[in-house]
Image (cartoon, rainbow, N blue to C red; front, top):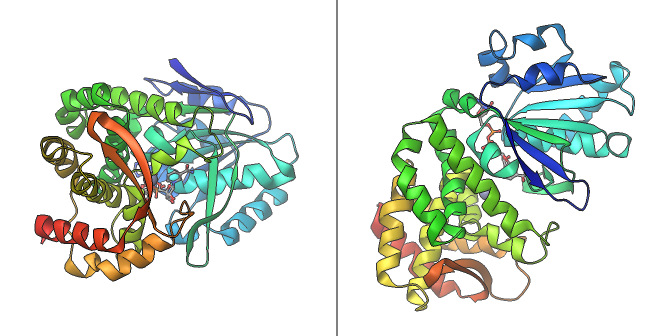
Length: 356
Ligand SMILES: NC(=O)c1ccc[n+]([C@@H]2O[C@H](COP(=O)([O-])OP(=O)(O)OC[C@H]3O[C@@H](n4cnc5c(N)ncnc54)[C@H](O)[C@@H]3O)[C@@H](O)[C@H]2O)c1
Ligand SMILES: [Zn+2]
């Protein structure tokens, strides 16, 4: 077992990598513990890896993006109160980003904050969302509108749990892994490339290496900006366009896949603005971005008016123009707030030529 240490203004915490999952025993021995487990994870692992939980208090949570809301949070409060939950309760959350967001919110608000541990079980949650302290809920049609900053006491990662992940979710997480390795600079991009095919073949040592470096790159962008007021914004690379594409597709396109398309878009804008060379643009497209995509895009999803509308709603936007995070030569990240609608239209045309 080895650790990554995360400094947080709320409380410092560790991410622990475990080869064998023996930490589950340790977690069952925590005083006043209660487990909340993703329904699919429970279906797959309750008889084997998680069999030690059979004797414990377990709440099984149905997982769907539409359930990431205040209603579900209230139902969990009710279940906890029925079980006479006290302030000294410790919750252990086992699942992906949806479960993390719901349970993290519950833990940050119940009695103004109770102790919680997180075991991420998706590639997105292991490589990205498990650090950063954010909890989020959807409100009406607004994604992630409500939330808090509340890190777990500890995160435990057992990479082999990814082997049961359906491929659409694997590729969604892979989009974020690719994003972070590009943001980390030439060196981390090379590292990713050297293990790319082994990652695609689900080799656990390659996955672990990629997850470890993705988390370290994320930490680097968060350091000094935990509350997302400056440099942490750069982590939105691929997201300004990606979020708009997700909503233009009525959320049919998985998040991380929309982020990959968003990076293709951003790189095209960088090319047109003369800050990214044609060679690097082609290289990134060929070696990182296209191999990371399994979705097919339809023309109805690439309606530039809908995408512009979506980009206007970007939470990170502050000025009159549209916001875009871009990568330029030398793998430097830059944020602009003067993206024009005409540039979005040109970028969409580029994507249409690529995909339709
Ligand atoms: N809090 C943050 O910082 C943050 C950051 C990024 C994304 N998110 C949120 O994360 C959510 C997406 O999370 P996600 O991509 O982890 O997916 P998810 O939580 O939606 O899980 C994907 C699917 O895989 C199943 N699953 C989970 N682990 C499994 C396993 N090991 N084997 C088999 N099936 C498994 C789940 O039941 C679900 O059906 C979104 O709601 C997004 O807004 C939060
Ligand atoms: Zn994302």
